[in-house]
Image 1 (cartoon, rainbow, N blue to C red):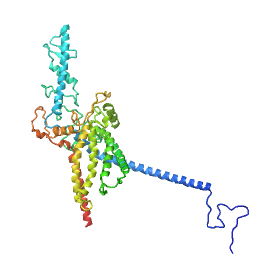
Image 2 (cartoon, one colour):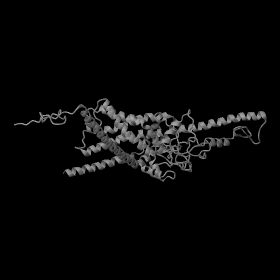
Image 3 (tube, rainbow, N blue to C red):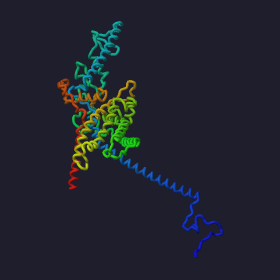
Image 4 (spheres, one colour):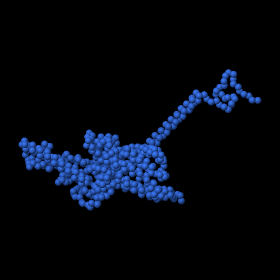
Length: 503
């Protein structure tokens, strides 16, 4: 016989107790209790998510700090080599003309000297006319109101004019006081040659004729530079690399999502249609490179300027930015002669670098798994071609970056110094990318001849074709080729070892 539990006479059964009629049924909670339980569950879930996000943020911050430190140390190792290459790329080594400039430079210097002399003669003529009217003459000659001395025949004393001109224009386009003893007849008041030791300022290095290692050792052994100069501009370069690391992939992913393209993490060689992805990749590199180009400008100027505190123009990255804005204008950070080379450099560099695997895979039909040696050999050849295209653009960019833009509408900053470079640079500015390439080939392409101190004016005439060459556009090429060949050799040896293990 079955027994049932009936409700007590005292009232309704407890809502939380089992139903006697349906022993396997559990009563649902009340709306208030259900809301209370759901609220507790949501709060607990939010707390767990917040704790998880905090842990993820801390892990991401630690990972970012570790990566930033590793990146800084990596750039510190490469900084001396990049500094040496930069100095080689910007230094001016003319061939056999013996002067710091071409024919246009010399003509411009003579024109300015003649204009100055004509001004002195005109002022002296007016003063002489005034003295004749008033009878104020002196024995053996007289002086004008501006101090120019005339002889008893009423002609300007050329010796006095030359000394005054040298005093007034001693620092025009010249890094140090220059003597005119090299050519007294023409009155040249400028350095006779970049190879002349006597007229070279103390803070400037002698012309570096060797490679990157020679430039590094000369910079480290220079009295006003030292070993620390090998790391000039490293912090600016680190800031640039870190900002580029986050900005470029983010922009590329955004463009890919906007145009509904494949994920940018998939290698291009695995895509059927690579055109759209290459377009977004190049566009992201171009935009980010253009926006961050002021950091490249500042870094180049910091590396090239002298470390002598008495002659140094920029004390650091922030001071360089503020000085450029005050003296050259805000647009000098992006525009001017640097605009076109910047756009070309940040377009061709990623395009060439990312096209190499595609060319090897789809043109040469080579695979790293099937033909590792041939793949490495093709990669070496294409990397060399990419280097031959990129180096001239990089050289032109750096030469244009160290040109301090002069704006007549702006007043010079109080206490501002001239931009003194640790290596000899071309004093006459380049007018653009094409002019820079032409001048480098024409003026620095031939063999360099030392002008002896005894016969500084004796310059051997060479055939016109001997002055043409592209060696000035490829400074630092040997270092990059050595690096590429070394990587190829290491990869070839590794592949041979792997094949031996398979057998």
